[in-house]
Length: 86
Image (cartoon, rainbow, N blue to C red; front, side, top):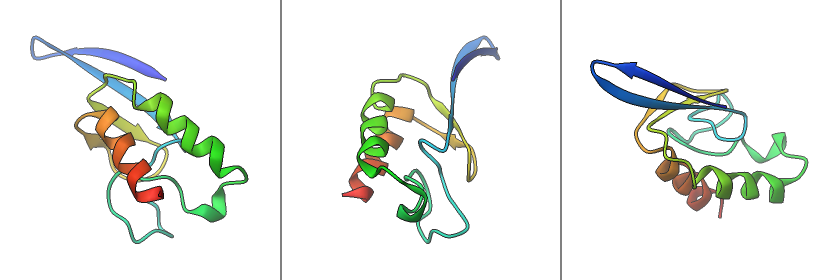
């Protein structure tokens, strides 16, 4: 889900990723953008395919289902998560 906010005279695009892309999880030692740990994926191929869709987004704030808010390119966050997953 995407939302656009006007703040301080500028536009901030935010994307709510839920569990498709997270920035941390209590069972993960990784900090920053990542997929949920493998034990939470029934179909890992679909999780990776979701990252490809997220890479096409232009939002600059990620509000994940788990972990802290990620400020920066959501596309780059998805690319990082893909790299960590491979």
